[in-house]
Image 1 (cartoon, helix red, strand yellow):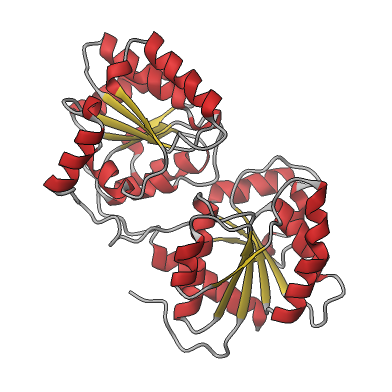
Image 2 (cartoon, helix red, strand yellow):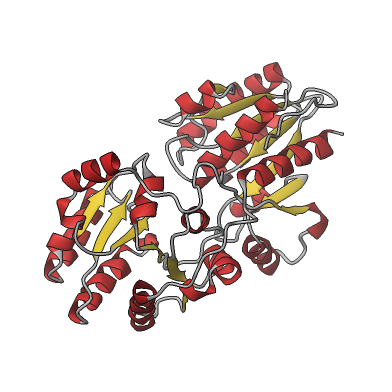
Length: 374
């Protein structure tokens, strides 16, 4: 499937985001840029840069380095530069994906003529208030789930619903093929690096090094399963990152105190998540606060791997639709252990995905740009 088509006219789209290091919003920037280029449009991203910049540029988008996402008064000094860039680039649409870049973009557009269209995407369930309300100033307000839409309407009752568009994130089924199994060479290399993960079902919790992602619950889950005579292994994937050293030490102390140091591995972000998910008996989604979407839920289910997660926010929404057997009441550790034991014994079958495809998200994004530019 392809998003390439001859557009009625070529558009210039500028996306604003703090940086391109990692994360779902950042990945959506790349995927949108890829679709724009394939469709014959001009794609530009303004951010502080990061490891994903090389891929963005390799796929045909232009990147301009400007730190517009740092929460500092110094960031306001970049406003003149941003306004000059937008005046020079003459975009048809400025698409903002985070609150501080949204404020910067909104102020930078003042006085520009012709004024570009302004679109926002609310990727998370931001704390309501004046700072977050900038995301409601878009001519179109994109949310990534029904959960996101409901959240906005519950906190901003006067919001015009006709401006809201639900465009869920999507994954490429070819990148996460149904029934995929990693080859022997990958498995050998993986277990050479992490010998403590061999010999029992692998539980994988993907998530940044933040308390919100539920790492403590995952550790307690493995310890409780062990007490019940059920041996498992745990991979905390992506938890090691700069600035989170104290948190990682806290997790390591808990792992040692629970007597499972020989069953757990902690890693930085990795590029082989497809193979890791495919090797996992369960992929965990245990965020202790509801999130707007649960991309890893879709990725794992696309591979035909069971997902166990707390049934709130976007994760709960996805599990209710795609894999109800994986739902557990938020924070209910006892039920979490019971459900994990059940799924490890016999997991219900998983049907191939028919929704949440990357092509669907890209087509919806292009249609939205063409709608406002028309």
